[in-house]
Image 1 (cartoon, helix red, strand yellow):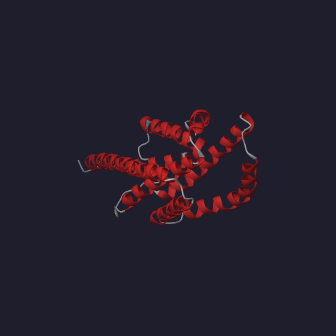
Image 2: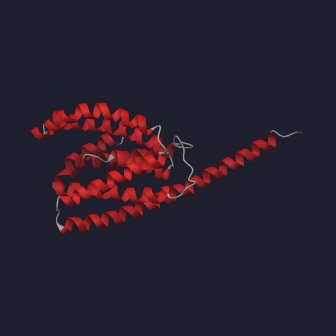
Image 3: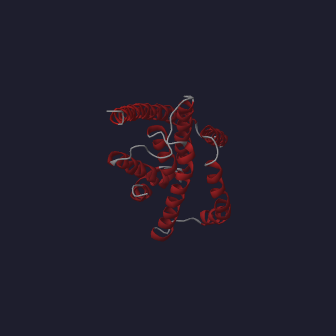
Length: 233
């Protein structure tokens, strides 16, 4: 949140005006689709170790989350979503936090930034269209009722099931975008972003694997040392 707030302010003033509506949709769908591909490859590793929280949390990991929040806040400013996917991808692919923890965590985080973003655009900028107010009025009771239910169910489902929901949602989003008949230039750029994003998320997953191996090595050494010191004299 500390990084997302200034990221949103910068994005809404300097990044959002650079894109048209169809371009914003293309960016949102392309980034999410690339992440779904990377998450699928990651979950193909049947014996992947996961954690309920970030293991061995320290200063550099906090800085990673801070800068990830800035990027996510910028994405939120022009796409309406960003902090959730950015944090979700970092903590699952890099820090190997289970999807059962990441999903409800990012839902709460997204809701917090959404409230700030709506407040900022309405009060500080006076830039909320009447249609947005109508969407807001319709979505409030739905989100308030189904959001907590989804988080509760997600915390009790296997991480592979939660990941499966991500795949289905991204397929629907991609098909829905294509059904709007975007220009071929947007499709071509979106394809390049999906490919580039897939490479980036795959590299993030690889870095997470290296980090995980180091953690497991330290834990094994610590266990061996504890076994030696607690043995008979």
